[in-house]
Amino acid sequence: MGKYLQVLRIGVQNTLVYRVNFLFRATVGLVPLAGTLYLWRAVYAGKPGGDISGYALSQMISYYLLVTLVDAFTAVAEDDWQVAADIKDGNISQFLVRPINYLAYRFWLYLSGRAVYTAVALVPVGIFLFFMREHLAAPVSGVALVAFVASVAMAAMLQFLIACTMALLAFWVLDVSTFIFIQFALEYIASGHLFPIDILPAWLSRLLMLTPYPYLLHFPVGVYLGRVEGEDLGRGLAMQAGWVALGYVLLRTVWARGVRRYSAVGG
Image (tube, rainbow, N blue to C red):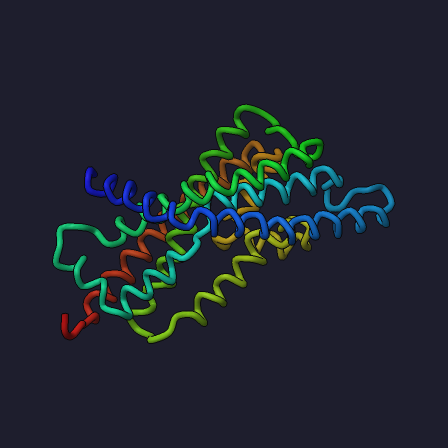
C-alpha cells in the first residue's frame, strides 16, 4: 500500500504543474453551463405551469449545478489517452517486470488528478455557485446525503473502469481514439450530462437505466435531489455497485488477455 500512496503523492506533485491549465479549463467550462441554464430559463418561460417531468425551474438549475460538481469529482481527464500511449509506445513493459500493479498505479494517478483538479476547479465553480446559490437545493435528508457521497464514490470508480477498459483496446488496435470518442458521445448523452434522463419517455428512461452510464451522473444527482428514494434508492445503489463489480471483472479480463498478446522490441 505504501508504494501506491507514494504514487499518489508524486501524482499530485506532477499534476500541480498544470494547475493554471485546470483553472482555465474549469472557468471556460462554465460558459456552456451558463448557456444551458439560460436556455432552460427560456423553455420554462414559455411553459404553462412551469413544470417539466416533475422538475421546476429551480430544480432543473440545481440538477445542472450538481452535475457540474459531480463531474469535477469523477470525470476522467487524460487517463485513457495515457494508458493507450503507454501500450502503444511500449512504456508499459517496465511495469510488467516490476512488483507493481499497473492498473492500481493508474487508479492512484487518477485519484491524484481528480484531487488537484477539484481543488483548483472549486475556485471558479464556487464563485459561480455563490451567484446561483438561491437555486442550489440542499440534500433532502441525511440519508440522501450519505447515499449521494457513496454514489459519487462508485461513480468515480465506474468512470475509471470504463475509461481504462476502452484504453486497453490499444493491445489490439493501433489507434483507439475512435472508440474513445464514441464512448464519450454515448456517455455525454446517456449519463444525464446533456439533460436529465427522466425527462425522456418512460420506456427509454428505463432502458438507459439498465446501462452503466446514468450511474455516472444522473443517478447520484437524483439521489441528492430526493428523486430517488426508498426501494428505488436501494435498487439503484445495488445496480451501481453491480456495474462497478462487473466493470472491474471486465477490466481484469481485458488486461489479462491483452498482456498475453503484448510484445515489445528494443529498450
